[in-house]
Image (cartoon, rainbow, N blue to C red; front, top):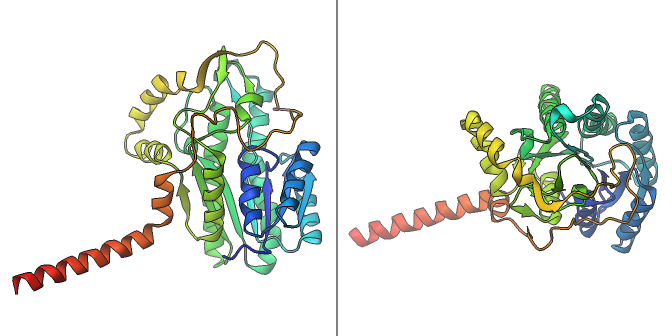
Length: 332
């Protein structure tokens, strides 16, 4: 798919992966519709898109509110044109033992991370079905396959989003629809969420290393929007986690129990008082990156190999053919 002048909607667009994804689409000439809760940070993202030379519309909305997303989609189509790509990226989490969480906290994580994906998909499909075209990108995670300690609500929501997406995809296939739904499963990414999501751990939260920069995730999302692959795994850690869980889930339980606990904490103590974004956005112009720039990888060899696998297969076939021809010539 050529992205120039296409209309791309991104939820959770004001910071982190959403902000990096906005830049990646805008750099390719796409018109962008941006959704997030914090109006000031959202406007900063919109201004950045305009500076990159593309039309951009920002709508402050909570993805847990289905009517708000419906209204946002209507505005994007009125001001930018028909929606071609919808990226469901918004998320939140609580770093906590399951039994230390309140029902309200668990519900809120589910409403944003899972139901936000449902609401966004509904808003997109209502418009795409009329034209029988479009792409919906669900931003998933290795944790959509493998739950880890201290993030039960988030892991449950990502698992639910994957099951929901499988059902929607099957319905579209049944209808012989030209609409494509894909999931991009990410590794640990250096975003601001580790400084604004709720944390009941004694030490500051971190992504489980190895850590990747948000631009790696953004490039994967753009690639998925342009190519008809069912799922895209990003980074060797995600591949190992997903495939390992399929082959030996009980071993995955033990590895998560041993490494997943300490791996989510730095050595720094968690501040006694800190703003959290679970119910209200944290103010401030957070960008795409979190505080782990010194440790984060700017690229992924695995992602390059995955997105070029057809070319690699062709090159290997040609090499085998040439080698075989040369061997026969030498024998002759």
